[in-house]
Amino acid sequence: MPFNWFKLSSPASFYPVAGTLIPWFAWGAAILAAIGLWLGFGVAPTDFQQGEVYRIIFIHVPSAWLSMFLYVVMAFWGVLALGFGTRLSGMMAQAIAPTGALMTFIALWTGALWGRPTWGTYWAWDARMTSELILLFLYLGIIALRQAIGDPRRADRACAVLSIVGVVNIPIIYFSVKWWNTLHQGASVKLTGSSMETTMLAGMLVMSFAFWFYSIAVVLARLRAIVLERERDAAWVGALPDVRGNAGVLR
Amino acid sequence: MNATAPSTATILASVPADGALAGVRWALARDLKLAVRSRAELGVQLLFYVIVVTLFPLATTPERNLLSTMGPGVLWVAALLASLLSLPRLFATDHADGTLEQIALSPYALEALVSGKIAAHWLTTGLPVVLLAPMLGLQYYMDGESLTVLAAGLLIGTPILSLLGAIGAALTLGLKGGGGLLALLILPLYVPVLIFGAGAVDAVRAGLGATANLSLLGAGLALAVVGAPFAAAAAVRIALD
Amino acid sequence: MNHWHFIIGAYGVTLVVFVVEILAVRARRRDAAHTAAASAAPAGARPASSAEGAR
Image (cartoon, rainbow over all chains, first blue to last red; front, top):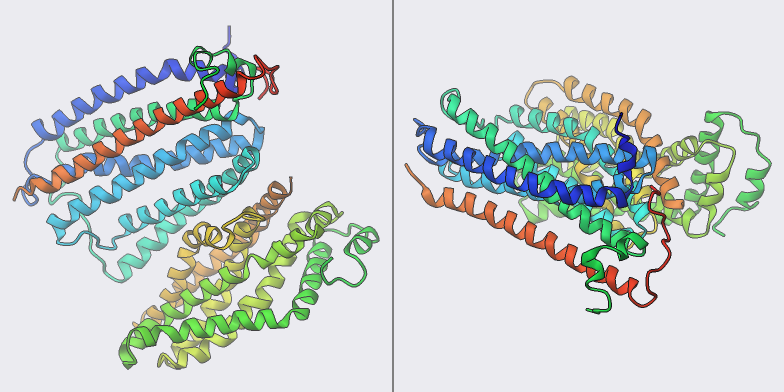
């Protein structure tokens, strides 16, 4: 019997599903992170040129990948929100933005701490880091727009348009920054001195999955909070055990 | 009602839906007429551009070489800021008295009307900057070739600023914190225009020729002309709902 | 060339960011549940303004 995915597209139906999924992804993230860190610190060898400091890439690269991936996913939910008008699509996009912004911050922070001992400066205006900084601005713009618009439906659709415009522009922005950087012969950032060892690559890949699972867990958790906020007058919300238990307790 | 002599409603009621170009022309003519009536406001925006451009040497140095290196960048950044300053006007005045809603209900396609408004915006804010910048470039000891490439880049680039800016202006219609929010939303999108526009002048000064940069700007303009009116119209509908 | 303080700074701040994010989301959910309870309590179980299956 084919599963009717559309049944899941109401906040009421998806809320408990999200609740069931969260622990799986949370534990998955923890286990993957343990494996990844073991690979990164216990197995991967010391780099010939950079010593131990290169091990920062085991968070720098995964967070950078996630920051871009999450933006695309957020834009995808934006397309659904505009196309189908489902509340849950808008809520998903709303839930993703903060996590995406934090991933971008982590990428920038770890990049700076990697750059200082390796190339002498915290910030080098290279193409990837500059594009990452602009990506942070794009995320903050979406969050700011969401906060500025009172009506949740208008906010859903406005943020959807903005994230779609953003997603189209990100390759253009990256290309232009790369152009600017190579023309001015900015710092050429190489990940490691030699081509990457297999164990390093493996560690990065596993950590990327760990970050991905973590993001899913946190986004679903935030989604549940958003659902409660936006659907608080619905009867099904009032019947929830953790809501019913608090009924009459005014904060 | 803002300054339209026969009311907008009567004009819109009597017009046949003649296809997209008619809508563009109608909005363009209307917005130009309105702009002419508030000439002072346009003058103020140009003055802002001049003042900003004058500030940078005062803050850094009157030294010739440094100024001629900085010049293209400063003139471009100031153009971006001047664009931001004038963008809220694009939809806000019409929105404030309800005219925008009537325009959206007219038989003309909203995309066409928005295009006409954007064209009027560029003619009244972008084009003056294109004409003014070469003169200000002389303050930065820029030579004739640099000034030509600067003007060419601004000519191609300022319409892109108006097109992208319209999307931001529509998204932030009626919101508090308008100007700052608009800047946060639009400036990241402006970055490629800035890079290729200022980069064109730098390339010419380095002896590399500006063709690549200007072609990329042209491609960007083509993309913006095709895409931005749809995004802006969608944003207007979202704001009006 | 060890530079362990950079490694600790990178991993440490990342960990802090994740912990703060998780705590913030949990607090947000608690607040949302409280507010939902407060709006449900006075009038009893109010009829749904948005039906359960509605999207």
